[in-house]
Image (cartoon, rainbow, N blue to C red; front, side):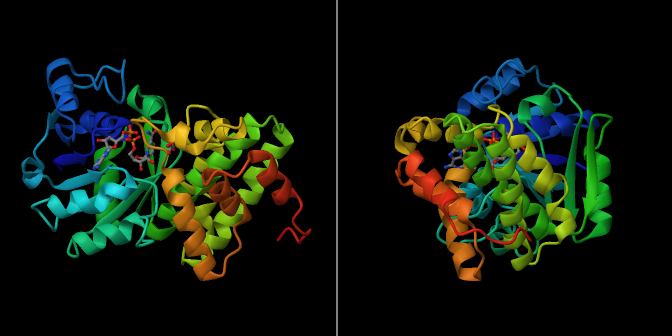
Length: 323
Ligand SMILES: NC(=O)C1=CN([C@@H]2O[C@H](COP(=O)(O)OP(=O)(O)OC[C@H]3O[C@@H](n4cnc5c(N)ncnc54)[C@H](O)[C@@H]3O)[C@@H](O)[C@H]2O)C=CC1
Ligand SMILES: O=C(CO)COP(=O)(O)O
């Protein structure tokens, strides 16, 4: 299986490194400097500095070069997936979606965006607790690889698996997507807890109540509960709610320390998907009649409400049943 990767950020580069264990890989990057650095020095100094890359990875700046690929890993940020897929010449190549988010405006999951751009292409979702820098250096990692077509799922898993990269099979594409999109918003909230110095009890409570939100929203959108409780849901939620290696968590730390979202997001080259997903997730939840108070709180913080006020009103909500 000839693998192509769309997106030369940290995660696209790490996934190219994973795929390069099983053969040559072609990676499309938007930035000329990234293409040159990968081809000349086997390094992505812009987005994944300090990690030596496999010589089996070639980079290109031309999407047309991906025409001969048997499968494409789509790793552009969620807000840009539609635009990039619309520019691709081949429209029926299997797409493995690796971005985590919901498209602003349309409120579509990345899978729905991909299906609209390439109606004939089989779709899979790869998601889980996966910091790019750990995957790229070969630390043990497990992911959900979801696809409705089980034969394609098996082929993709065989092509990507290695002793340190372990894909688990699922047919629940929507569930795998929702876990990854929602956990980014909750990771911002957990960062706020850290930044505001609210303690470990509060963080554990937020993870548990955040998981309840993720589950309510996921079930309303047709996800399966076991997918949400798996690697792509709870697994990734725990990872990104525990570490400043998470860009979303770090953004939250800044908000909790009283800095403004505008300042924190200005001049950022890397993506904190939760900042884009939070408002559209809140809209989608309201439309579906799903209560998501932590998501609403993150929206207020991103709009500039003071952290102390947002935290007080979250804690002052009427008591309710846990279930
Ligand atoms: N970095 C990580 O550890 C992981 C990231 N992800 C997800 O992967 C996706 C990509 O994130 P990263 O690789 O981390 O990105 P990054 O933050 O390392 O780099 C930013 C990326 O955005 C691209 N970009 C910026 N403007 C663009 C535009 N107008 N059109 C197309 N692309 C544009 C850049 O070319 C670059 O590839 C996100 O959805 C993220 O949530 C998923 C798992 C792990
Ligand atoms: O999705 C990730 C790990 O699974 C990366 O999280 P951040 O985008 O918050 O860094």
